[in-house]
Length: 133
Image (cartoon, rainbow, N blue to C red; front, side):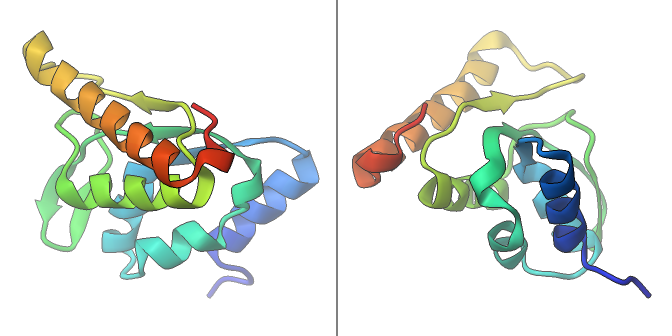
């Protein structure tokens, strides 16, 4: 039993500390699988006015209902989709692609960087008033 949800806890910490928020899109996806909730509803419940930077990465599939946020694989389609949703809510904020191990050849890694750029470009075209990045 918890007195507040994870999103409420994050919101409370951010508000009380007066800090900004790094939005970890892969972590939202991983936790949504591990804890059986909608990643889109979770994203919308966060203090989005405090998000200044976004983070994406890959994860390890331990089981169909258990993901581990390892930063050791490529970003997968559901995480890209969640990033698109984040950009639709926030505009194309600066976004970090993290890969801590299992580094692919540079051209393969740069394809993911280009995917981020393309999604940011699309977000700028759709939301010109929120074009941060």
